[in-house]
Length: 155
Image 1 (cartoon, rainbow, N blue to C red):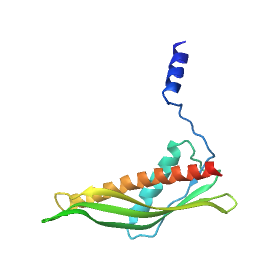
Image 2: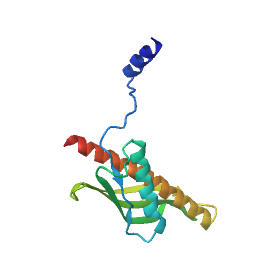
Image 3: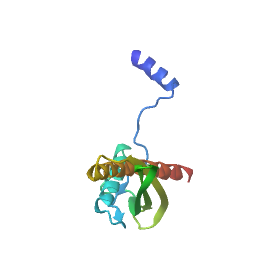
């Protein structure tokens, strides 16, 4: 009886049970068109984690998500008289969904950004940039998958 009451109250509050709706997806390694060797791996890993978190990751069936990291740029985003206080890293990402027959059923391209602070030295700044790149990969993966799922529902 208590469980039924909790479910009714939770449904009234807008909460729903988590579900792994949708068809299974495979994730291929990212093609990295940048000079930053580790960046493609970060983006592929983040995309794979996002698909897995949605309960849709498959190793053998369904369409394949193919990502490409087109560009990664870093530059100052806030300065004062002494120099840069904060920086921004931008990434241009392309996502394709390739059906098992080889046809591309969906394609999306986005530019994503993440800010990071200057470190106490060059090594600290580089560590902050790499952490920002990891955050950027996760946010971009989440956004690209959400856009794909919305487009798929609209068909």
